[in-house]
Length: 377
Image (cartoon, rainbow, N blue to C red; front, side, top):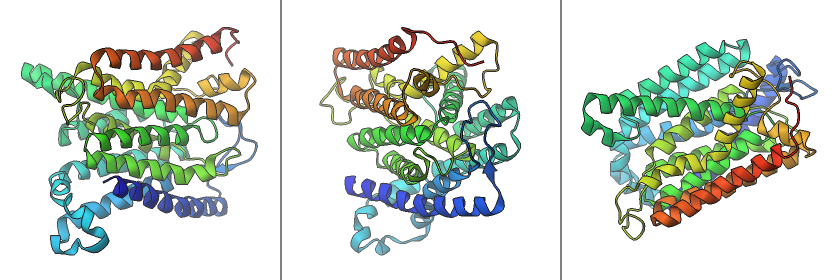
């Protein structure tokens, strides 16, 4: 399965690269460009296409749709030769068909929402409402939710589980959307997080979720070729919303325990395993909550655009754009690798590992605010 997953990363990357290039050429010819300086977070000096999300979306979507069709229409006798390793997974994929169709519909909805917003700039409240409605439809329709043990408390428990899951979707989707504020930042962080989940799900034997993580990782890596500073292509909301939604799905569907029974709670879900999503995505969440705090302090709209993000604050400290992005990538990798191991540790080890990730964020906060700078109005 490791070889298959790595192949899916490569396939998605090879799909993303040419599609991003084609979209970039088309956008230049048609004038579908992101005008410089129209919003607080846009500092680029020239007009750049913001349709890179199209490449990411289809790099993920084509294999997903292909797998769905193949699992429903192709007989087992067709899975021969190089496709033989996939044969054993077809029954499981057929059982996941409804969930996969729900994911395709949800991701497509987020993609269309992002593309529309990139063109006409929808009101933030309307955009958030649509995101939550899409998340609710996915959660209720496909039972993609957390804390299903709450169902033992009856209707209240089910409603609580649905509510928490929908809010988590909203948080992660907007955290990744807001992180798309500097060349290569969101795609790099998203690739690292997807890679961490790929490792975690492979260790846990969750091939379906591993496949999703592999596709997302590859799609972003292909796009990153055009986005690293100096950028030639932006992903736009048509990409960042898809990345956030799919990371939310992956984080919810990942099982946070060791199936071998060799570690931690002996194969039973342990409370500290639930820390994994927060630890793996600690850096995007740090950016989200820190910039939200700054905006509240300034009396600005929470969902507005400005240059007070974590990356911008690092640049104001004297780092170059590339250096700031690399620092955030490495912080994401440091916290992510720690989170990846949480489900396989004893309780005291998990606490130590989570504390280490907390110390990384604390170190960042100390470096940021030891010589405080005035936020950009």
